Structure formats: structure tokens, C-alpha cells
Image 1 (cartoon, rainbow, N blue to C red):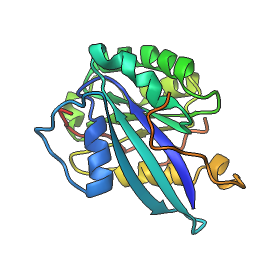
Image 2 (tube, rainbow, N blue to C red):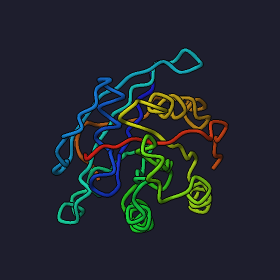
Image 3 (tube, one colour):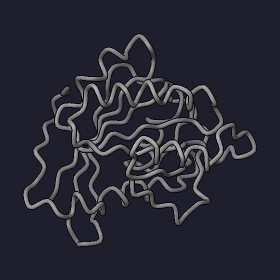
Image 4 (tube, rainbow, N blue to C red):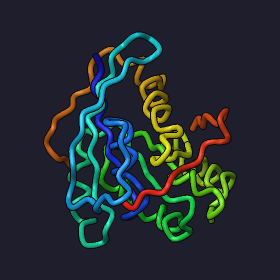
Length: 200
């Protein structure tokens, strides 16, 4: 079994909590409250090699007044999932600030994954797929995926793709992960991926 610590970051309201809840419980709460501080989730899947991958997931707050707390969750993180809202240009504009925080706080070998959420609101899209893809490539993300926490579109695939990343499959030892807060090859075969409305 491999253990992989994942930290979700991004502006408040882009749907970080909703994505995690959809993956771990197959539930969606349209009235979810913003995360305060950080929340922890465990989620296990079996990858294509038949290996159980246990995701040690930390959901962080996106509000400005809690950003100073985010760095402590990055200790021993293997993946940083940066989420924006495809219907919010502002959340996309703020990605560079989040990437700066990741580079400053996370281990140097952390893998960056970019997720555009709220794909179910395609008619309200403000950030094009191509623009987000180019951004992800520019900043070295190993994956760009668009999801809908509301419908569940591509949420399971997000974790499946991480569980099957070669850099994890080639590890000979289990990743060292604690439950204590601590401080691209882009797969785009599914270009139809886009995300859902979620106030969390």
C-alpha cells in the first residue's frame, strides 16, 4: 500500500471541499460552508497495478484571513491540487499567487495538479480549456483536469490518474505521511472534462 499526502488549495468558493466530499462520500452539498483552517479526509483506491493507494487529503481554507495557516499543511505533501472555478476569472487570476505559496511552502518534489471545477456551468464559463491548459503547462503541472463536483464528472478520474502516476508507481518504499498538519505531462484525452457549481 502506498500513502500519498494531498493538499487542496485555491480560492474560497471554487469547490475544493465539494470535490473531496464527492470523491470520498459520493455526496454533494450545494449549501456547504467555507472551510475554516483545514479538514482531513482519508480515501483509498486500487490503481491499475493492483496496489492500494491511501490518499491522506488535507482541505485548506481559501479565504485571505486563513492563508497564513495553509503552509503548515504542506509538510511531507506529495501532491498539491490547485483548484479554480472555470466560471470565475478572478479565481483563475489568483492561481499565480497560490503557486508562489506552494513553491515557498511545499517540498521541492511536490507534484502540482491543476483542476478547473464547476464544469456543469459550461454556459457561464469565463476561463477557456485551452487557456487553463497552457497555464498548467507553463507552471509545470503534471495534470490539468476539469471536474464537476455537482455531477461527479471526472472527480473519480482525478484520483485515479494521481494513483497511476509513474512517479508514484516507481517508488520502492511507502511514502512517509503523517496526519499532523505540516508544513507535465498533461493527460488531456478527455477534453470534455469540466466542472460543477459548488459554493464551498
